[in-house]
Length: 153
Image 1 (cartoon, rainbow, N blue to C red):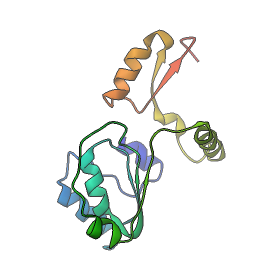
Image 2: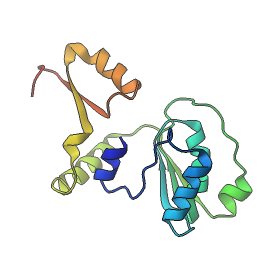
Image 3: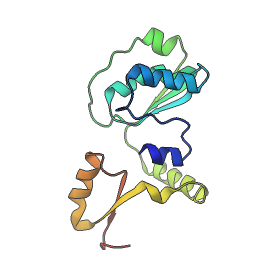
Image 4: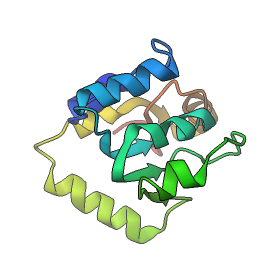
């Protein structure tokens, strides 16, 4: 997943298993001359990543939380010090509608030759194998699992 993020142009990717929270925060601050990230996107589904995201984001930056689709548990946040004082903009997302799909497809079409979209598909499954495709996605063993109604493309 980190290599794919880099191939799409991510400036910094950090393997959560390789660094302590303090090391991750320090790495982001060092890479941004002490400012923090303009935009931080939390897409892990790990509650502690939300708490860290506040520390990654620069003053008046934007923090986008899209990875919390299940109840991963609570976090401790000091609203005064971590939201109001740094003037953070926080965006959350729960689900989507057809308008999101349409806009996403337009973005993919516009940048078809700029990004390796096909690399996001890490497995293909026949319709009869849908349960194992969903299970692999749940275990984070695939990035995008393609389910083929006829079994092949």
